Image (cartoon, rainbow, N blue to C red):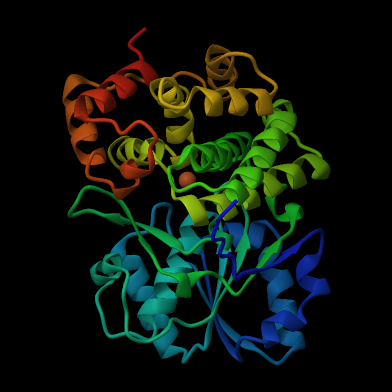
Length: 368
Ligand SMILES: [Fe+2]
């Protein structure tokens, strides 16, 4: 047994964890920029909780709520300027993956004279402002990763940068904040979390340690799959999904993702398919493609889910996701050629070529 495992984020998990641990905020600064989307921070109840915690400790704040889904380079540059204008010394990200990833980019841009595009190099001279993350979806796991995924219109895809300096210092996970999510957002983000665990388990960069977390996440997802399709989930079911998401993030922080995310980025960029849904549509066929290379791992994934075959998994995911329009031949050509350039392709156990990616795409979004 021989592994490296890095997780510098302090995790607070449980109902009312913000109020119960409000002193943590005072560890990191006195002037916060809160980075979030237009409405979810308020609707979830997270924003008032955090404002109360900050006020208790004499921390001032400004809210930057311009983060849209799949944040652009322009949005994080504006956020960096907002942090400088406010003379922020800490960044608090509240939201799904988009605000959390944007918070990381903004924490870097606040203290470095650089354009957002230069973030993709992954290096910057000044250490970013400390980041605190409060997830509002059970999916991204971004609260415990060193990744920030942004939309690059020049390269026509989503692209990430990674740097250990952008691991959040603290993460607050309270399942109450996910209670107002719609059925489709719950499903899409939940399947993103499953995808992180499954891809991390398959990844060439996986280890004994990350495998344990991944398998537990997959097992817990298997227990939650029935709840995922419901319109109203209990708080216990929400907590289980949030736990799966947390484990998935801890796993991919070590292992990266694989061809599923590489291809999924094209479905999101060009077809506007939500990120988790894109992964869910592709997951089973990607597993089928890798089965010859790692049959024992595919068997372990199915066993952890309580399933016998990949077709059973495909049916379960299809029931949750519903049908999707097939790709045109032109789309398949474009998507596969962009995905092949993604760095996470190299983590896939059976490395695909362009023809393989085209086949997985065509089989994942069939025409009938
Ligand atoms: Fe993801």
